[in-house]
Length: 125
Image (spheres, rainbow, N blue to C red):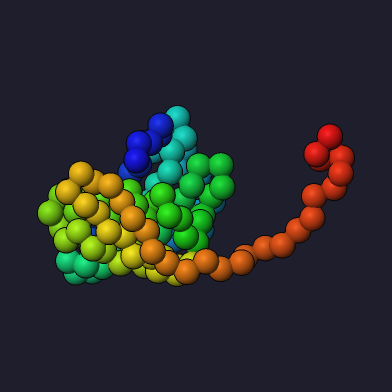
């Protein structure tokens, strides 16, 4: 997996206090990321579990993200903080990440419908 934009990780900090401070202030992290990027706040709970909060460029606060989960788990594993099988906890749910020796990642988790809508014919023309 390669990323066009860098990912930021803040390890072992006061995850919720720091993240909520910026979300409550309406800060889009432009101060830290003038070229726009995704930001994950990560807390390592144990060798097989991490917790993340996500701010995605263009979308803002995000409840869950497979790519953010994969990136956070890969960094935790690369730094030796976690083993190769990691449960990632997010406000929107959990996902199991498995990382092989070549850093190929498999994700296993549930899918939840969060919205439903209809496209008008005008959009498609």
